[in-house]
Length: 235
Image 1 (cartoon, rainbow, N blue to C red):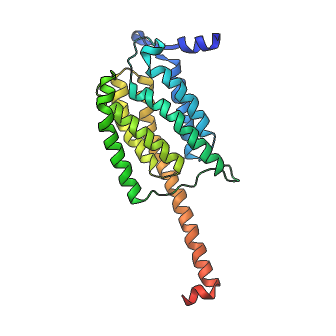
Image 2 (image 1 turned 180 degrees about the horizontal axis):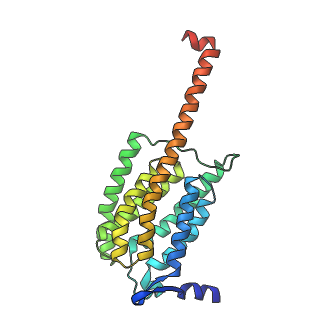
């Protein structure tokens, strides 16, 4: 109990009376580790991410957990709950698909229909949630909070499914998240979102190369089979 109390009270202070909550810093560090594990397709990425989500939930519900000088970002708080629920699904899915080399899901490209659906859900969900978050008292601009929530939901689901495009959804989230979090005074999270933006682009190209390598191997096997199988040659 003393450790929990210390964790809730701990602050990192710097000039001008400004400070960062240690929970916010640790939550984002766990999030970064989870993203690194996701890029490497490691199952441990999911439980590490869940720990970070639990810490950040206590940060963004400032009025509930008595955070000093904090405002409520309901979209940010809600997405931590969504993260935890979706991460359980991803954790189970990746454990079932785990390979002998320790990697889990195989990166695949989403179909054009799936891409269109993701875009429609992202824009439509943002429009639907904006008035709800505003009525609940979320920080302005509320549409940005709703965008981050919807984008995070779709990106986490896409990661669980192994869609390469999920990294690009994270980029869209980060572009909106940095100015929103900075204006709300969540400086550690804003900085981490900025870092995530570059990191998620790296993750996209890593998964892209894995997918391209798998496709090249499949093409090579097809060619070799065609040379060895006379029925394939005649066809």
